[in-house]
Length: 369
Ligand code: M6R
Image (tube, rainbow, N blue to C red):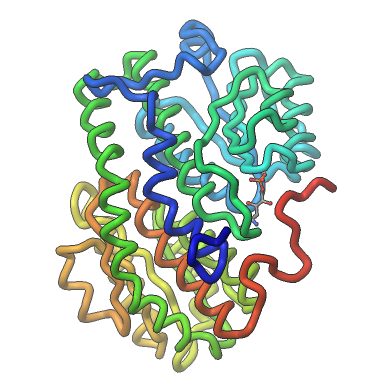
């Protein structure tokens, strides 16, 4: 049932290229338009939206954080992301023209369900992104876009996360298309890149041996820090979450720019810091900022594990370990950069003798508040 893999988690990591392809299937036209007729919101409903709230927990929340960057950039409407357990007890300002996107792999997470009900009471329109057909969250939502990741057995979310990202990209591009904020050829250009991601990911997955070895090596570390900027920030948080949940190890993710506002004092001789470097293409300025953050931590003794884009060879000078990922446009990069972090966490957990698929104290779907 594990298809020859040691853990469901490894199997599900390997399934990610197919899961992305399946989530795109039938939702893109030949000409590179987004087709989301299955989502029961009319074009007029979507034109009326003047604010987006994304609400979720855990890994799904990290997908929402990435979506905020994409939606604000492509659609040019305000987008907020919030943890479901916080949103629920706040008085968010919502009305009929607010689109609330709830993201849940299981569709049964109680915190997210309560947040959804809270949004509906205030007449907001709720769109669910969900991986489980017919579960409670999509049933109670006004509309749903299913991720086609297939069943996810391991408690740690992997393929569900990447397919949630894909669903968010589709929604963002669809909104931009309908509202006329992006030209058809601009949407088509992103679509072409999205279509290429399964193949790029297959290439990346084929050369993860070094990352596995690094995982074994890091298994005795007492703490691992993760830094990233822009969409690399949620990737850093996701890398840290995977490590906490699977390896029972102290791990923290930071926005790279926040280091100097406190966390940099954590760095000591040999502290492992995983650095997610933005693509040098497009907004090269962000890449340079992260590289200087890497130099800052290195100057204080950190052991740096650098995830960068192929071709960005200059970063090698600042990396104790370098992991190269295939080039992808900035907003889509989490589809690549997250994957080595999943493998790292899996390997560290296994080396520590932990139950990778069923970590202690956790359940696959959290149906209590
Ligand atoms: O089923 P959901 O997407 O609503 O679950 C949300 C979180 O409980 C979940 O993502 C959790 O953080 C994962 N175990 C992380 O790997």
